[in-house]
Length: 120
Image (cartoon, rainbow, N blue to C red; front, side, top):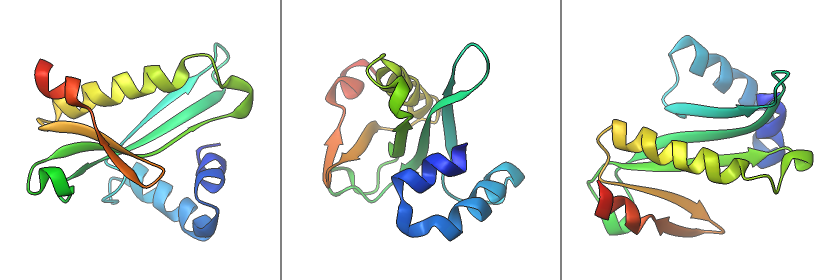
């Protein structure tokens, strides 16, 4: 199911998704560094957040920043607060990694979570 979600997020890289997921589980991949998921009560995958640590963000060059590379929620589970929960958990993961901030790319814009800096 994770592979199917990746295909929906990034259809141009379909042939790479399976090998990248296998590398992640084998501990051989470099990205994503972490993956958070949401499941329903029956264990069906509802959402996935792929996370990395970046040091190349223009406003934070050279600083480690937790970064959401991809976030996908199955259509039937949208509007239930799953994205918010995954983003809060992702921010917590970035803090645990010692990151100086937390960001995501939304429609080509880099968004830095300013509240993260104040509470870290």
